[in-house]
Image (cartoon, rainbow, N blue to C red; front, side, top):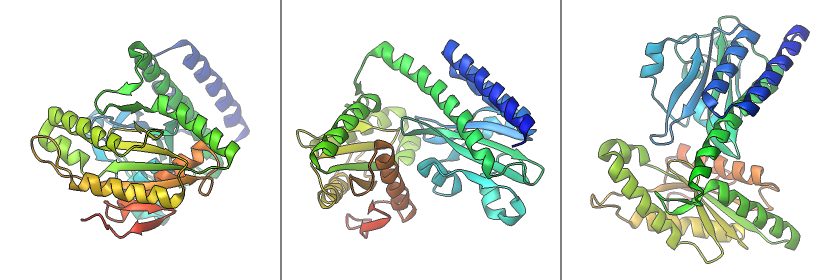
Amino acid sequence: MKEMQSAQCTEFVMELLQLLATHRHYERVFHFVVDRLTRLYASRSCAIVLIDSESEYLSIENCSGISHAFCKSFRQQVATGSIGEMLWTGRPILISDASLLPEVARSVQLEQPFASCLCVQIAVHHQTIGYLYADSEEKDTFVESDIPVFNAFARIAALAFYQNRLYEDNLRLDRIDHETELQRYSFFSESLAQNLARAAGTGEHLGLIMMDIDNYKRISNTYGGATRRAFMREFGVVVNRQLRTYDSACRYGADEVIMMLPHTTAEEAIETALAVCETIRAHTFTEHDLETSVSCGVAVYPEDAATIEDLILSAKHSVFEAQRSGRNKVYHKDIPVSASAVGG
């Protein structure tokens, strides 16, 4: 980034922080992020793309240089390709010359082909909510040194979104997600921090299982909202039955659940994940006798990570690998601990 751009960037960030401190509605902050990045890099297109919490599809929340018709029709799955990997792992997508990576460029582009592009994850409190996208008709508009700049803007956008959601949650003052009867992540994360600190002090293990429902979108799209809610309520009951008295579970996303297993080794966490997979696969849900499976990622403290952030990231990465390998799998450290032993 040039010196003039750097000074302008600092000015824009300060303006954004002031806006964040004085406004509760994230839409205004989103507009500001897109506008300032477009001006800073002379981008042809810039957009904030969010994961819809109900459908798990991606949608364009705010943009510049993209037609209204495209935004309205855009409905993309959170796939296991380049965008899906970025959303799961947090690794940015930097394409300085699209001609050198034509397939990746096609999978990433929004409305029009580009010469260069940069995408970074938007996440807060370890939860991915979408990504920030910018492209250009010129090669090398975006380089490695621009990634921290985009990350800074993405984090401010994430904080604005989270601040709004926290305000709405506080109106309800509720620790429980009533669609699943599992904990809300905001309260679960406090317990996770306490248990991790305790494990660090005593030298104990702590297991984490992240699971993603494999055919959630099909159930939602085929049977509608009422059946989806009934399915998730029953799914939460099944998960709760797998917990010991000192375990806990939360709803992490529309179709994602995290189980925390204190005093649990890697072998024990894997065994629990396999049992959960088998129980869910054998269960029929709702009056429609729906069947489903889950993709599970296992991460264990202290072998896999030393912090909450890294523990969740490790579990996320394993879920991504489980999905990419065909779903209905349990993964730990990129290794399938069962070749779909719980059925296909």
